Length: 165
Image (cartoon, rainbow, N blue to C red):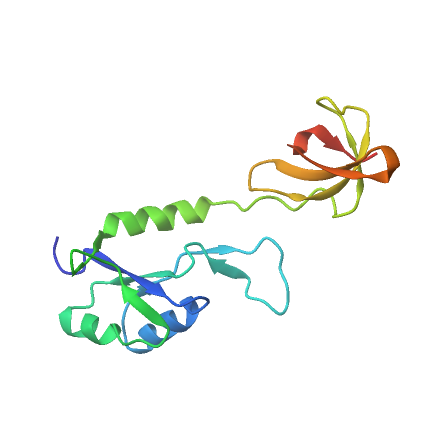
C-alpha cells in the first residue's frame, strides 16, 4: 500500500466520537466518522449518530502526525496489532461509505407502548395484548398478555402477527 491508500482506526472514550473528529480536523487531518440518521428526530439531540460507536477512521497522516494524534483529547488508542497500528485499506472505507448511503434504519414503531393490539397469528390468535416494545431491528416485539387474575405475561412474537384491535 502506498501513502494515502490506507486508514487507521481510532478508539475513543464513550460519547467522544465527535470531539475527536472535530479536534483532528482542526489539526488538518482527514477523519471519517461513519454515521446513520436517528430514527426519531429530537430538537435536543443530533440528527445522526455514529454507526460504529467509539470508532473513527484517520486517513494516513504520516508518522509524525500519527504520533501527535495519539494525544488527542478523548482518544483512548489507535487500534494496533502486534504493536503496529492496523492499516485499513481505502477500499474498505469506500465500501463502508457506499453501504451507509443505502442503509435504512428500522421504520417507525407501528404501535405505541401500552397500546392494545390484537394477535392474529400463533397460539394466542384472537386475543388482545398490550404492546411493549421492539426487541431488535428484526420484527420481534414484546407484548403483555393479560391472563387470569389480571396477571400480565410477557410474550415475544413476530410484529406481523399484530394488528390494531
